[in-house]
Image 1 (cartoon, rainbow, N blue to C red):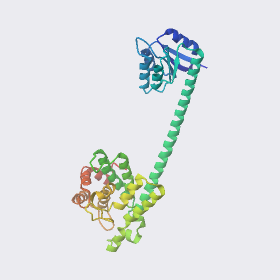
Image 2 (tube, helix red, strand yellow; image 1 turned 90 degrees about the vertical axis):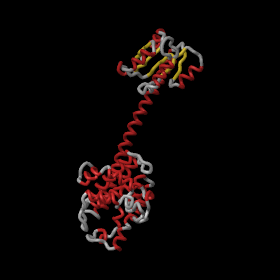
Image 3 (spheres, one colour; image 1 turned 90 degrees about the horizontal axis):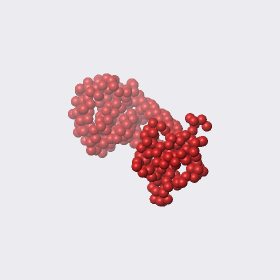
Image 4 (cartoon, rainbow, N blue to C red; image 1 turned 120 degrees about the vertical axis):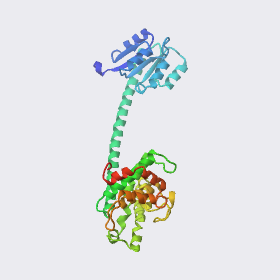
Length: 362
């Protein structure tokens, strides 16, 4: 075995005779680095990796073996190195303390040649096995991470395609989805960064709400073309039909939950699809929910959806200016919209305007 292939053993004992004995026993199979003090050995460790440590329990005049062991255990780079304690004491408490504090084995002095060689060989073999297992777990974890990333990306693409398919029935392009999603993102991120009782959002839930908002109008896939695509003003009967799209959207997403199981993203999507036309004062549809009975995700999406509708041209109306759209939102705070969320929007007028202009967000 070449010098480079040999395992390195750090031997720490205040008795040079013991160190010479260790070197004599192990010299043919290992590279031995002997030290008579714990301080010197730890200094060596700062720049040199080792595979195993032989550590004397009692070393008068400097760090004890227990102090060295504690230092090894508290240092991330050293704590995985196996330690075999060496001692001339027959005190059983020393053995228990050594093993309790991280030593892998315990060997009494005077050292027996065959016993030391066998215990060192066993610990080296076990450490090699642990290292191989760690590498195997790391490789498998990375494979799972990549597979999960691919699955999440596939789900995101599927969600986007489904949202755009629904949006294209009602709009000429899919830009309504992009803009509405980005308006929702601005408000949700503000709530994450500025916690307020009743409006707390974790980063993960905010991300779910942003993705789920893409499906707010998915129920429109169930609307008849003659009503959904009508260029002029709807009759009361036709508007009653349009008002059912939140119910259809919720049903579609309920079916998805039944098939796929409970899921935070699908739950938010269902809440948004069902409740984004509810109004703070209870005059919305389809259930006439009031105030905080309306899910937070739906209250956020309602603002984003209306702002985009106001600032977009439709066959039956011209686009409002940003200024007029903001004025309408603010006038409807406390009636149509959650008044606190409108205060959030006021802090981000410029961000909304940039999105409307196609600047700064996906």
